[in-house]
Image 1 (spheres, rainbow, N blue to C red):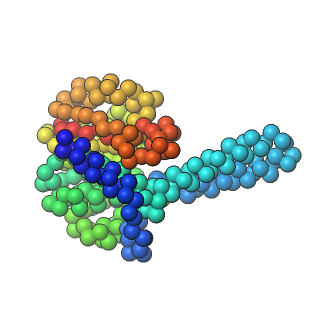
Image 2 (spheres, rainbow, N blue to C red):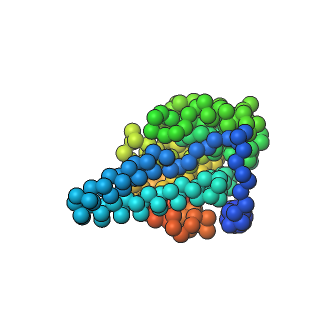
Image 3 (cartoon, helix red, strand yellow):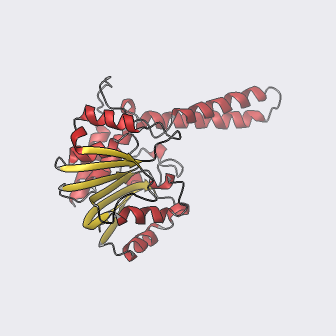
Length: 271
């Protein structure tokens, strides 16, 4: 009931659409939709449009890519601070599903530019939070930006960052009182079975500790949700539940397509 109340509050805040203007001293948390994706779609649309003067049927492909460019541009805008900061509201739901008193150590798996890491530190003022990520050229994130963001947000003394893979965490079993992750597990490329990524994340949660993993729970990746919950319980997890973010009222209808945010949800509970 408490989580439902908090969720309704977040939905209400989002629907108000009150967003402060960006300032140069604000942290840079990036956007889940990379600029280079827009460039690629735009370039393909222009190429096919040019080819349509020679091959008439190319206009069909050009129209498709123009539509895709428009849709992805809209999605990127809605995710950004200027478009309502949907990213922040979705991320906030992870924090609201961490059933923890905030005393001890927490881990953020796949921290990107440290948005959730810093969110954990601010939401739980007594906690010390570690953010891990592989970073690399695939994404517009870096450890340096993480550290800068932590300084700006005033939590640099309680957070630290290190490079690591989500499929093989460099920590002893039960090292953390709480473990979180946001839209990362489906991107882990060195493990085909994403359930193993969940299992590895749970390995480092102490007995009685809390966890909240938000991801795109596509059926072809994780299988049926009820079956997934049963598998997680079979690992000896005390309690695990699933919150369907996609239909919580936060995600606009236009972004609930299966290949966008239509399968987003949170696996959470107590070990």
